[in-house]
Image 1: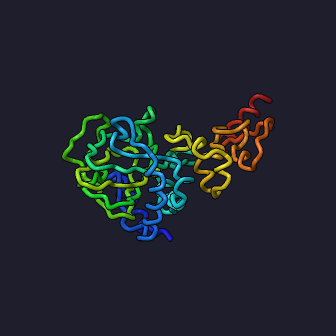
Image 2 (image 1 turned 120 degrees about the vertical axis):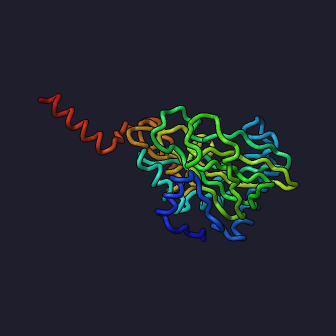
Length: 287
C-alpha cells in the first residue's frame, strides 16, 4: 500500500512558493525492489540515449504502464492526483498522462542542460501546464546526479538566464518522490561517482495539449483495454470537451471493446457553458 501524504494545503502552498516539494519514504523497501526488478529487465536491453539533452551516458525508456506494471500504482497515487487536480483541472476538462519514463544516469554523466518543461509548448503563459513526479528508485545524492532545482521564489525570470548558485540538489532516499511544477527550472545533475542513479518520471499535463509521449502508440487499444478505466482515461481514451480527441467523432473508448467500427454517428461532446451559448444562439436565429 502506497503511503498517504499529509497536510494538503501546506503541500499546495509549498509548491506555489518553491515550485517543488519532496515526499520521503512513500514506497517501502519491498515496493522499491519490485520496481527495480521490473525496470532492470528493460534497462539491460535499452541502448543509451542520443543527444545532449537526454544525455549520451544516460539510459531512458517509456511505455512503463505495460513494461513496468507497478508504475500503474504510481500513476494513480491519490495524493499526487490531488495535486494535479489543484494545479491543472481548473484549466482543462481533464488532465492527461504526459509521459512515463525510466531514467538511469550512469557514472561520468555531465549535468543536463537547465530547462523548464513547460517550454515544450510554445503557448502564452497563463497557467501551469504540467505536474512532474520523479520517483527515486535509488538514493538521490549530490554525487550520483540528484535532480537540481531552482526554487520558484528565487527564479521568476522566464528567460534562459539563471543563477547557477541558486540551484538546490533534490537529495532524497529511494522510495521518495519529488513533485514539481512544469514552470520550475531544473536539470539532471552530473554523476561523478561510481554507481548509476535510477528514477522514474511520471508527468501530467492539461488535456488539450500534445503529449510528450504518444500514449496511443505506447498503449494501443489491444493493450489499453487491459488497464483500469482510470488509467485508460489518463492515457486519453476519452473525449476532452469540446470535441477534442475523438474517433469518428465519438469517445475513443469505443475502441477498447475489441471492435473498430468504420461508421458511427457523430456525437456532440460540449461543456455545459457552451451548450448554454448554443441554445441562446438557436433562439436568436429562430426569432
